[in-house]
Image (cartoon, rainbow, N blue to C red; front, side, top):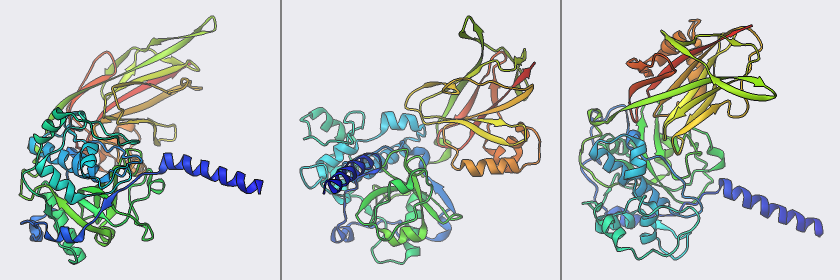
Length: 468
C-alpha cells in the first residue's frame, strides 16, 4: 500500500511538472447556429484564377506568444493575432519587432470581457469576440499585458477602455465559408481571403498537441484528440498543399510558434472560419513594406596566459574580398572567443567549413527578447590543435532559417570547394542573400538594407589563420 501511495505521489508530481512545461489550455466555444447567420461576404466564392498559388501574411504578424494555463485562445486569435495583422497590413508595416512591441493587441483584455464564467478556464466564443470588437474594440498589449497564469477581475481603468474604442472594427465580422461545403471549396474560400490581405480566424474541432509538436513543422492531426481551439491562418502554399497557422502556445512550439497543416486535415477539422473585414483591401502590397538599415558587428579576441590569468585582446582584421582575414595568424592552442551583436527580434547563424569540405551550423540565435551581445562559445573558448585556415560565415536576418537540415543539404550539394561558393551558389540559396552590403574596412561588421518579413540574409565571411 505504501508503494502504491509513493507511486501515486510520484505520478502527480511528474504530471504536474510536465503540465507546466507542456500543458497549454485551449478554450473555444463553437456555436453553429450563430455561425450560420453571420454574413458571408463577396469572397466566399471566387474564381480560381484570381487566387495565386501561394500567399503569406506572416511579415505582418507579431511574434507568437503563450496563453499558458488560461483558456484564452479566442483572445489570442482574434485580438493579438487577426486585429494586429489587419492593422499592420493597413499601415504597410512589416517590422515584426515594432508590430509586437508597439501595435499588438491584448489577448487578455478581450478574453476577460467575453469569457463565459469567472475562472481562468472559462470558454469563449469567436462570435462574441467579433461583436465586442465592433462595439468596444481592444486595447494594446502594452497597455494590458497578458498573463499566462492568472486572470484577475478586470481593473476599473477608463483610460484603457477609451484606448480600446480607438481600435473598434467597422464590421460584425464575416463567415469565410458555409458549413457543409465541399473540402475543396472550403480551402478555396480561405485562400481567397488570405490573398485579399485578411488573416483568417479558425475554429478547430481538435486541439494541436503540445509536446509532440515542439520543433515540428507539420501538424499531423490526431483524430482521437478532442476540444476546440482558435488559431489564425496566415499563409497557404499549393505546392506543399498546406496552410500555415499562428498559434498561442509560445515560440518554442512548432516552427517558432507557427505550424503547417495539410489542406486535407484542415478541411476535415476546421469547422468555422472568420475574418474581420471582407474587402479586397491593400493585400499587403510589397512596395508598402518598410525597409530598414540594419548594422551588425562582431569581434574576435585572442587570449593569453599571464600568471595563471587568462586575458583577451582583439584580433585585427582587414577586409579582403570576399572575406575578412586577420593581419596576424593565431597560434595553435591559443584561446579564442567570438562576440556577435544580435538585435532584438533578429536571427543569426554561424557556419563553419570543416576540413572535409562540409558546412555545418555551429551556433544560432533566433529572436532574442532584447539586443544581445553573445560570446561564442557561450561557455569556455575555442582552441585549435593544428595549423591551417578556419573559414566561417555569419548569416543575419529578420526571419529564421525554416529548415536547417534541408538548407545544409542543399548548399553542401554544390561541388564548389569554398564556403563562399557553396553558400552563394549552392542549390540557388544565393537568391536569399543580400548583395548590396557595405562592409567596414578594419573590423568585422556590415550594414545592409533588410526587409522585415522576407527571408533574406546578410552574409559576413571571415577566416582565422592558425599558425605554429
